[in-house]
Image (cartoon, rainbow, N blue to C red; front, side):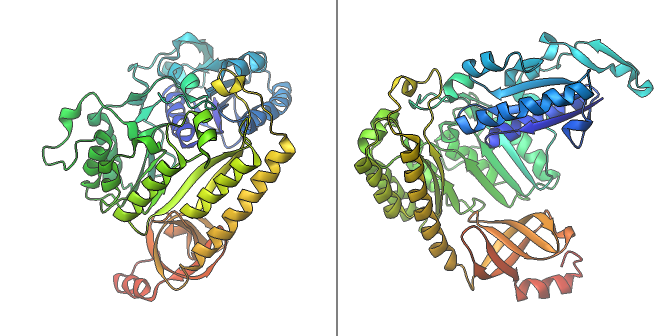
Length: 456
């Protein structure tokens, strides 16, 4: 029996899929290359934004065709799915599960391999339960050896008026320090170079076992203290995290950005640049507060690269208020922004607001902000020409290697497949909006030759 997982949504969804894969393989399933080859299809989805929901509905028609060809096919929907979407989709899937349901799957039933008879390829209907009821204790089936997502908390207490996360993920719950460090140390021992810490409000991390922090730790803030601990692990090269809330960027967390293994990038969602809009969003800071925070961060780490999230066309957003968002964007000079046109999500506070910005106007504002981002990003990227950046290669295609620099800039250079999972110093030759072209630096080539490194 084979399974296939399709993942929509954020990096937390991707991490969840790694645990789902582990559960299925623990119970005898084997991964399939495509949905067509699978006996069980899992859609791990996100209904936080309408665009993601639309993708789920788009898959339903394809699944109907698959079931005609394979009557035994079972399809499960899981992830961050709102109640309204569950109700609409309940007849389109065999099961709709919460992420936590995967920690003990005895509450549903489908045709899966009988462990005692797997070698004989005999199949029967049965029920399984994971031996550990803590979802985060499930060892993931990591997608990559050199880079890993490590969730440290889930849920959110902020209740931004537009956001469905508290309703689909619940209130904030943090993993124990001991559990997180044990997972990271094991990953590092097995050759992992980059750790990405995950949480819907990652810098609100509040573990119950703070006594497990080292007495030598420089910080009292739990998240800053965790970053310090992970930075002490010798074989790790990079530490990254997403996504923080501006209100939880304490002085110690800001200081921790300067730790030696931290990437030189911070994703800091602002969502809007107008005080009235921010108030309706329940973001609990003003535009000036955000600008002051950016100033404080850049004072501590002057060359840090900043990214953000912005929603355009929020209920009641006037053209003048949108102009204030443009002004803030220019003042900060973000290197990248993930832009969304507002869409109401059932059950949230903003769903009660009148969605009074026409879609055409939302699109217009999105295009203006997108064009501004492209202009600023290209200008900033051109400053990398002639400079050497450190690149962790994660992809190879047609004689080219691709990877991210410490600034989370996408870099491309000529290389070999064996370079994937390794870090190289690359001198940038050309800059484009979304990618930097370069070549391995002369110094690195010389070093590789001395070491007879076949990766070079």
